[in-house]
Image 1 (cartoon, helix red, strand yellow):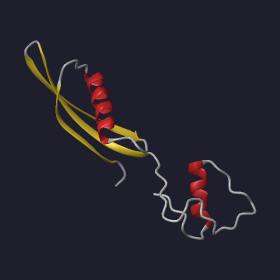
Image 2 (tube, rainbow, N blue to C red; image 1 turned 135 degrees about the horizontal axis):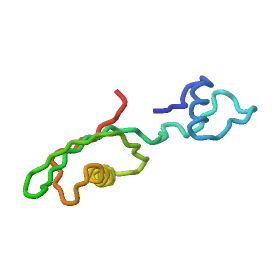
Image 3 (tube, helix red, strand yellow; image 1 turned 45 degrees about the horizontal axis):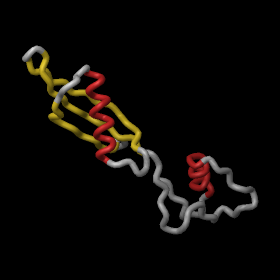
Length: 109
């Protein structure tokens, strides 16, 4: 998480790169780019795992797929779940299926 409460110009520079706004040359290094206590919500990368189950000609089929996804600020877990289940079903070619397992966790350790 980016913070701009210190007087180090390096922290401010990181925020400038992420936000894309150059700092005017006359601005002191102690300037706060965001109000005191404000948080800047950046997209987060999460790792997901989904196990799907369906039948092909009466034979049960189970596949587990995984990957990473960028979660945008304000996106809900339900929105991410629905998007990822659709992606997983397309990857394995399942039209009608049940979800046996779903995990969504921050990717960075």
